[in-house]
Length: 381
Image 1 (cartoon, rainbow, N blue to C red):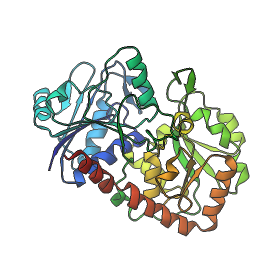
Image 2 (image 1 turned 90 degrees about the vertical axis):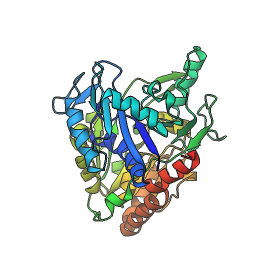
Image 3 (image 1 turned 30 degrees about the vertical axis):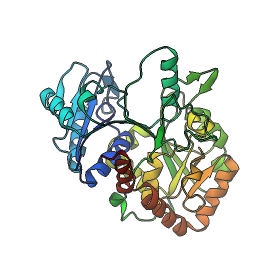
Image 4 (image 1 turned 180 degrees about the vertical axis):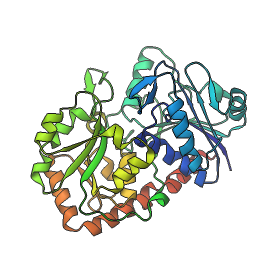
């Protein structure tokens, strides 16, 4: 058994999709029998989001209350620390945290962006898991070109399955990138009823931040890709619900093309409401971020992994992941609206078969215990 610290992003943005993303890694580590801790730090002002008041501030009381309760449900009570912008520690105290880092066997930076690396200096093994393939490596390259230092890790992992391959244009930034799938705890979703009358749905951010400029090219978000599939509802007999957040969403145009728009913040108010939305769906249709698609990164969504674990067939924009996951039964990788419509027709023609295949893909390739077990073995931790 190893003592493992995972640093990430939960307390500052305590909405269901974000919580699920990190929680699946934590559950996988716990189920492997390790002594697991979660830490998070607020290094900038006004980064704590309170969905009840729909505002950001330095006060993370909402996040602390809700995330600590969620962690307690998964054997992580009293095994977390949040340090706010003012330097106050919640959960584990400052002295406890420094002792924890000195006694830990492994430190995992999953979205902490190096904010705990000073404390982790005495931890013998430090690992970065990149959840934003392309963006992460381009930003690293830009820092290097400016002569700025990069955080130091012993291993670099990415969910971009194609990074380092000839068919992928993501720069490696001088690092060797080992691969990991976003894990999903399939044990949570063993009795999900089939719902063939539900809608194809997704939860998405239209545009979460500014586009990235890199070596004369623009790398963007889902807003740059969705137009390719705008006509999909009119090409099928299926219904489509998209829970959307983010800026500059063309709601009138989406509705005119028969997309049902849901409030993403309401759908993802808690971890449970996020899961409920997926459970009530027939399957998923989604585009991906422009960066993931045009680089052929091989990225596959943590959210789509949950859909599959629930037995919900998934039709998603291709990023090159089809060389790493089986497609054509329960999971479809598409690049055009015609391919998406054909995939929906295929699923609707034999929904029970594709639902079964979706669940099998999650259990075989994305199960948290398998994914995390392989990860830990590769590290030798």
